[in-house]
Image (tube, rainbow, N blue to C red; front, side, top):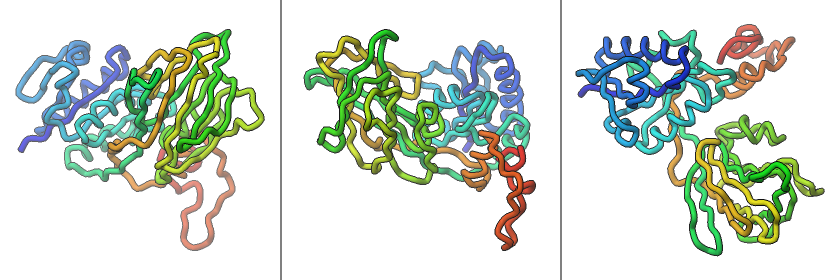
Length: 314
C-alpha cells in the first residue's frame, strides 16, 4: 500500500516554499505520495499528478498517515489541526526561531526525509485542552488547544474582571489583562512569557497563569490533569474579552461569559526521531549556560558531548 503524507508549509515564506519543493521531490522520488493544500500547491507551482494530491483544506488530510510541517511553531500549530483531526502523528521541521514543537532543524532535512521514508520514528502523545464558552448557560463556542487557551481583554484601556473556579468551587477574583490555561506542551510558549513555570511534557497537568493581575493571590498554579477550570468574566465589568486557542482560533466574549476548560479527550501525537531528553531540548532552545558540567562520573557524557549542550541542537 502506497504511503501518503500531508505537507504543510507557510505559503508566503519564500524559504519555506523552497524547502517544501525539495521535500516533495525527494519524497515522491522515494515512492511516497504527498498531499498539499491548494494555495500551497499554487505557491509551489505544483499540479495534481500520480504522486502529488491537491485538495481543499477540509479533505487534504484524508488518507495520510503523517503530517510533516515546515516552519515555526505557528505553522506547526496549523498542522496540528490536521494531525489531530485524523489522529495521525505530526513531524515538525523548524524553519523559524525557537521552534519548541519542532522535532528537527533545517540542517537535518536529508536525515529527516530518510526517517520518513523508512517509517522510522516513535510516537509521543501530548495532552490537549477542551474548552467551552457559554453565556447565560447557553453554549456559544467549543474548541481545543495544544498549547493554551487564553482569555484576554479586548481593549487596551479596559481591565478584565474575572473570577476563577476550580472543580466547581470559587478560588479568587482578579482584575487583569488576561488568564492563560496551558498544557505542559504550552508551558514554554505564552504561559512562559507571562511568568509561568516550565513543565516537562511527560507530566500530566493543567497550568493556570494570570497575566498582569492586580491581586495578592495571583500566582501561577499547577493543577491536576482532570481538574475542571472555569474563568467567569464578571457581568458588571466595563470591558469585554476575547478567547484564543493556540493564538489561532478566537471567540469574542461579552461581560458575563463563562469559559470552561478541561483535559481534551483526544491527545495530539508527535513523531519523535530521537530519544534526546527534554532537558537537552530546553538547553538548546533557550541557549542555557551549562558550562562546567562534567556529569556524575558514571560514564555520563560531558556537556560538550550532550545533544543540546554547548550550542548543539537536540
